[in-house]
Image 1 (spheres, helix red, strand yellow):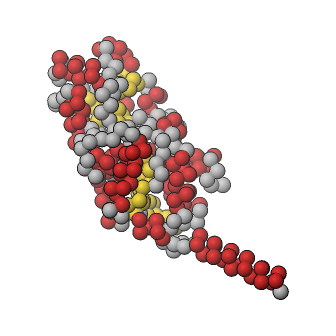
Image 2: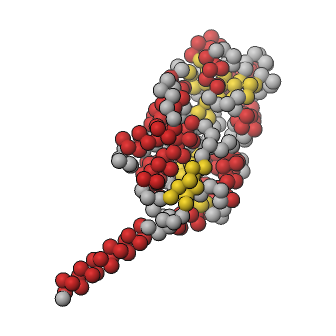
Image 3: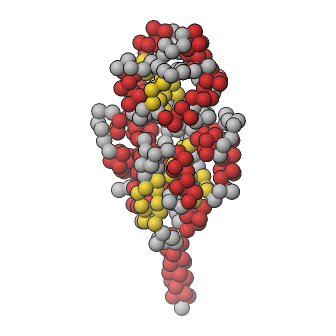
Length: 301
């Protein structure tokens, strides 16, 4: 009789665990992303991993603009997407003073977004900060290796250097306006706006002297570009983390350990490699790169 009771107890407990695991299984998780390579890969990492774990997901990736993605999250068009702490603090939460410590910045962003019904999961060590880069040859020719030297050159030779960047960079407080105020990087009318991916070709062809790049872009080392030193530490820290609606996370708590396990492995070097597999000679699709990485790291079979 005791054995029968024990067996029943085990079955009840097992059913309870199963029920908890399946909580929210009828919820469709809408996963978004911005429209550049890194974000497309991150979006697919979440989509493939969560789908493999048994969650219902909907692909809402490839949306232009940080503001647009943020609005989609706040209104429920997205349930989650990967965002950067520096972008959230400076641009989305409209703070003027940057916090230099990565953990402190994350905690401030996390705390501030609680009021917006947004939960920030644990961030990755990868820091996708903005940077300015030049070809090795042009840097050596002009003797420019730091942002201060670039500012001094621009002030002494107004209009001589052309900057290639995307449109968002020209308007963000943590972009060109802040650089002008900090270093004197006033390129005037010598600015060419374009898709981020074209910046590398533009620098290679000599159509621009300075280009806006992202630190985790694999095309930076692949094209032998010199990233100028941010000697006044202007640019914020851009650690990436999954930001998710609190009401969604309450329904599907099982997504948190999966996404945080992925984030734990995302270093600068890992992200450079993944980005280059899409943007480099392999020209793979983000979904292929994400699937291979998840399989190699044991997230999917």
